[in-house]
Length: 355
Figure (cartoon, rainbow, N blue to C red):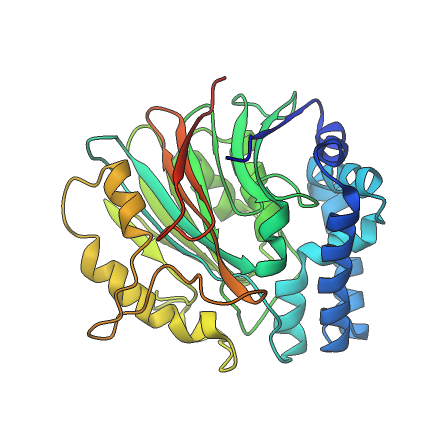
């Protein structure tokens, strides 16, 4: 088991402290490789650079804590702030360039309002295989986290809830990537997730925040709180679409009437190609009653490919997009169950938020 990385202090200090936990060379290498791939694919062309500059100005005005964490990460790992900031936007830049996809986010996520272990938020993290060695569970604690410490899954060299997280109030949020036709200057999903965990305690509070802000566009959020409130939010650039139900799930395409037409899939992407099938599997399986953490863990290791379904565990491949981890957040008890690697074969570990 890889022990959680404990990060204490303000946002800048937590970002810089990441570098104390590992050899910084690997983080620099992975970041530079992904930036080089994006540059070669034309994703960092003049329009992309213009968009990044506008996004940076937006973050300076609206998210000083998020930008401070980026600055701390850059200093700790010997990167520039621009490199870290651009790395976080690679999915958006790929959409803007409408170019060939490189290894990118995927993910399958769902949440239930209640069961033997209370409300659950569940995710398989499908991401670039180059992040296998730098994936970690982080425990953040600091004065900007208004509802106590947070337990997050992410990568060294990336801020806050880069994949998923839960705060001490019992609010958990995870994301999935969705390529979209249009983007604008606004909140990037990774910064949104971190702010939700820092500043809100319930799904209702998180939805109020999401309704009030401009979004860069792309991706979905799946969330639940200790009280059993559950929601999924599809993040368009001109609007968001909210689904509230006892059970919600998302893969890598929009499904609401308001935003389904905005999805921009890539025929060359195995993740995009399997998105519909993974959603078929979840829609078929999740309506059963009484999900507990153990059953959720078993589900995320499934390779059912019958009757239009696709394997929810996407672990095949060496360095491309693949399932890097599984996560089950138990909102009522403040416990994370995490699997480092493919959930079909690797063990799960119990990590409590309160140490």
